[in-house]
Amino acid sequence: MSDVTTLTTDALHSRVLAILSKAGLNAMQAAAIARVIVAGERDACKSHGIYRIEGVLRAVKAGKALPDAVPVLEQNDASAIVKVDAKSGFSNAAFELGVPVLAERARRFGIAALAINDCTHFAALWPEVEALTDRGLAAFAMCPSYSTVAPAGGTAPLLGTNPFAFGWPRLESPPYVFDFATSVAARGEIELHRRAGKSLPEGWAIDANGQPTTDPEAALAGAMLPFGGHKGSAIGTMIELLAGVMIGDFTSREALDYLGSTAFAPRHGELIVAFSPEAFSAGRPGNPLARAEALFEAIAGQGARLPSQRRFAARARAEKDGITLTADEIRQLDHLLEH
Ligand code: NDP
Ligand code: PYC
Image (cartoon, rainbow, N blue to C red; front, top):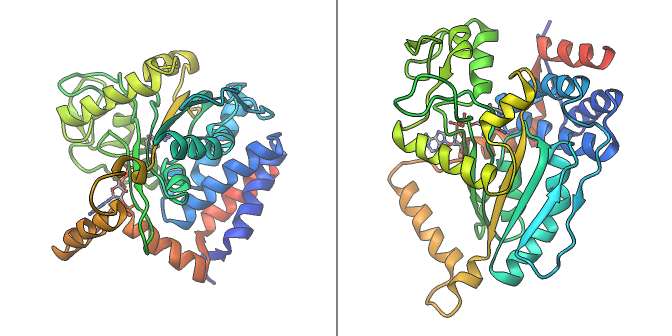
């Protein structure tokens, strides 16, 4: 008997939607969350796939996220700063509300930013930058998290795993996209190692005494490390400043103080900046998208792979053959629907 099941993306979307709807999420919250969770499984990004459903349900059950929130777009047609108040719901529905307006402003002004406030945020950021590259724009997205990462040279959690994503639209190929935690690995990876009973690679974390550890339990009780030492630490700090302090929302430390635990998906704000390559290069020689192709070809010409290549290959496989889940994962989905 096979211990895996293959589902179409639509079938998995229906199952995730049913779980979220049963837990009381309204249609816009549930649909937007189901889209990113299924996209995570489709693109083989397990750390932000169905495993995240439990964190969403815990946040709702504990009253940390409002399941029936309706995000509100601030009306200010003349500004390049677009603001969406998530009204204590999840970031995903707030992003879907704001992104068409962000794209329109980026085309009109050449650059525009979307600030989302008061949201619970558990998701990967690449679906968001891809929503902008799909519209012919380049984009950054970033957000704090909650304190789980020690600053370089420090000994205790302070920064979040603070993800940072970038996307650039391409002429004939899927976009150039990278998306990473500013810690050595996403916290989701540590949790998945713990569940699988596996040791962590060296250099990911320190224990509660500030000593290096490869034990996931000790790492979760201690602190994760920033990627690239002082460089990742500085980028993580920049994200706290721009996507926390500057937009008037929680830093990772404030998010943890508010939640009191890392058992819930974190609550804070998010900043997305969109650029029109045509507007920036107007009057200068060459088409920016064509010039970018020469750069990508030179990278690939050295045998290096582009970021997201693995993900796009997984997406193509899933779209052709479906998404494969283990028997344990199917049991988890059934359990979440029943309880
Ligand atoms: P990874 O280290 O797995 O990957 C980071 C990026 O590098 C990806 O774009 C990946 O592309 C690319 N990449 C990996 N290996 C190579 C290579 N050899 N050559 C070129 N590119 C490569 O990501 P993380 O574990 O740091 O983060 C995973 C996810 O977690 C992200 O989507 C992030 O948004 C999310 N996250 C969300 C948080 C939140 O608070 N919401 C907090 C922290 C993380 P590919 O995918 O194709 O391998
Ligand atoms: O994987 O570090 C992580 C994470 C934190 C919040 C959402 N994802």
